[in-house]
Length: 500
Ligand SMILES: [Zn+2]
Image (cartoon, rainbow, N blue to C red; front, top):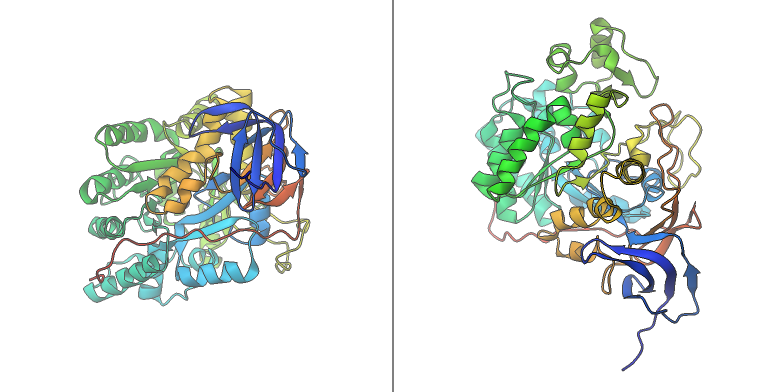
C-alpha cells in the first residue's frame, strides 16, 4: 500500500470535527487542496507546523456576506471565515458576479444567489444590473420597484431568476422585508421556482403582523407556510434583527414548522444593531414608531450623525436613500434585550451568519489589494467580528454553547443548509479525510472580536492560521497579502424544463 503524499501537517492541535464529534489532540495532513488524514498517531512530513495549544477546525462558512470584495473578505478571514456567500440580497446576473470575482481573485471561496429584488428593480424601474450591493442599496427605498407587476413583467422577472439558476446561482435571495406590500402570491411563486430548481430561498422577512398590522401577511408565518406549500427549503435570515423583542413568537412558529418537518432553517448574528440603507421601508417614520424605535436609534455610518428627529430623518432619506446607517433595534447592555439576542443565536440547529456589509471609505475607494485599510474606513462591526464574538461570548465567557457546538453553527450547519443544492458543500464544514482544506487554527484563550460600533474595521484576534483550498490566507496571525486561493461555489440546477 503506497503512503499518501502529504504536503503539510498541522501537528499537536485540538482537532474538532463537528460532524463526527471527533475532538482530540491529533495531526491533520493536507495534500493539495484536500485534507487527507486526521490521525492521533503522528503523521510524517517534512513540512510540519506545531499548533499545540490551538484548536483546529473547519473554516467558517458565512451564508450572509454582502462584503464581497477583497478588503471585506480579508476582515472576514481574520474572523475565521473561509467561504463567504451573498445569499440574502443576491445579485444578477450571477454570471457577471462570478466572472468579476474570478477576474480579480478572492482570498475566500465565494458564491451568489440570484436576486428577486434586483430583478424587480430592473424590470420595474430600469435599474442597471451590477455585481455589487450598491446596485440594490441605491434603489432599496424607492417605492416604484415594489408595486404590483403585470403578468408580462412578472414573467420577465422570473425568466431572469431562472437564467441565474441555470448559471449556478445558489438559490434565490428575497428581500421582501424591503417591499412589505408585495403580493404574497408572488412570494409563494418565487418559492415554487426554488423548489423546482432544488435550491433554497433566503428571506429578509416582512414585519411581524403585531409590529405592522398593515402587512398583507405575517412575516414569519409567510416563510414557514411557503416551505409547507411548495416544499422549497426556506432559509430565514437574521432572525435576531427581524424578530428583535418578539423572538419567542418566532421561535414558537419555527418549533412548529420543524416538528411538522417543514424545510426551514435559520441564522443570526451577535449584535443588537443592524445596518442597512436609510431609505428602507421599515425606517420610514411611521414604521419606526410601530417597531418601538426612534430616529435617535439610527446613526449614519459615513458621518456618525445620530438622527435627531423625524424631520432630519425625512431629509436624509430624501437626500441619499442608499446611505448606510446603523439601527439599534436591541440594547445589548440591557439584560432583557441581551437575553432576546441570545435566544435568537441559540435556536436549535441555527447557523451563525454575519450580514457583513461593504466598507464605507473615507474618500475614493483604494486599489483592492490595499492593506492595511486607510484610516477612517467605517463599517458595522459584524463585518469584522461576528464569528470571534460568537466564540468569545457564547462559548468562552458564558458557556451557553460547547466549543464543538459553537463551531458547528459556524461551519457544519451552514454547509448542511446548502449541500442538497450544492453537493460540493458536503466537503466543507467538516474536518476529516476527504474534506476541502479550508481549515481554521485559532487560539481558544485569545480568540475575540475587536471591532466596535465606533471602529468597525478592527480585525478579530486569535486566528493564527487560515487555509483556503490548502493555501494560507492567514499565517502566524498575519494576512498573506498575495494569497487569493478562493474558488467559486456553484449549484447545478436540477430543473431542465423551460421556465414559464
Ligand atoms: Zn437583511
